[in-house]
Amino acid sequence: MRCTRYILLLILLFVLGVYVFAQPIIIFIAKKQLRGIFIKSEVSIRRCRLALANELSLLDIGIKRDKIYDFKVKEARIFFDPVSLLRRKINKFYLGNTSVSINLNTQNISDFSQYLNLKPGVFLTKSVELVNLDLNLSAKEITFKGAATIEFSPVNQTINYLDLKIDSLDALGLRLIDASLEASKKKEGKLNIERIQYDKVKIEKIKGRTRFEDKTLSIDSLFAKVFDGEIQGDLSLTIDKDAEYLCHLKFLNLDLADFVDDFNLKERFRVSGRLVGDLTFKGRGAGVKADILSSDFSVVEPGGTLVIKDDSFLKDLAKKSDQSLDIIVESFKDYHYNTGMMKLYLDKGNLVFDIALEGERGKRNLNITLHDFKLGKEGGR
Image (cartoon, rainbow, N blue to C red):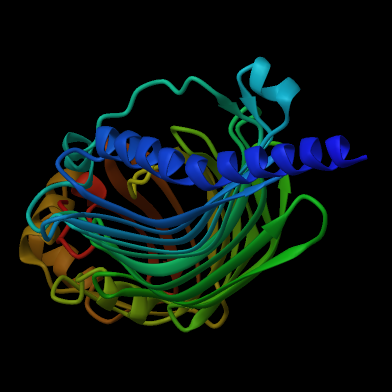
């Protein structure tokens, strides 16, 4: 009986010894790996915790390099089992309560890769869950402040759940303020954005219903306010490297005066009236350029007035119509239209407006081109 007790005591002491001495070894290995990934960084790990033979936790992780980046992780967990390890697979990787600060100053966000030494991992991770991730990013072309909780599968390259909150985002001239997006495969989520602004163009009070289907984020019942009117529609976004999107929008009661003002065209035109219409476009990547598939706009009764103040534009109209400049100037002097149609399309990167108006003084046709589709810049003729 005493022999059995001694054996059990020895086993207990052995297990306790392994547990005690394994912790500093695990921390040493983890710090070495992190220093290998984050080049020339200071790495600290306060302690680790083993839960039987299927879970490893690292607590209070710090990764810092000068004033370039500072990562603080409250807890990182790895879930595994003996069979998965033999197959070089990790069941789940969990990161909880993480703060990330990146300051690249005048460098592009792509330049951040020079501070990393990323190599293909030995183990394949089935599932990744990031909970309460705070991100503060500053680079040449983008600044971002927000938080996220996300669960995704690196194997299937799909997102199962996303809860994203953006305090502010400035990128490629686009500014986004106070946004939230919650989407899941299991239930319907929602989108709310207080304001998106590009130069003077503002889209406000954006709302929609969201859901994930495989690699596609769908936003239905989309609603927003723009140019003193409304937008309704739907959007689908394929979440991959190129981020392809397709959008169908219906515009209601747009104020043409606001449109001309926000596109910096008021020195060339003065216009009143309202539009309704439909627009379908698709695109790829983060730029503002897209392929317009179809567009169809019409004037809301009782119409409005149009005055062209740009002399060079009037001269071009006279040349194209083979009429004298005096006749063209007179024809667009406080011209009132009752009905009208407008189509827009992209031509070699230029945004083109084809406009046909009709009033008591006859018909007027206009062609307006915004070169390079750069909002806030005056277009060409």
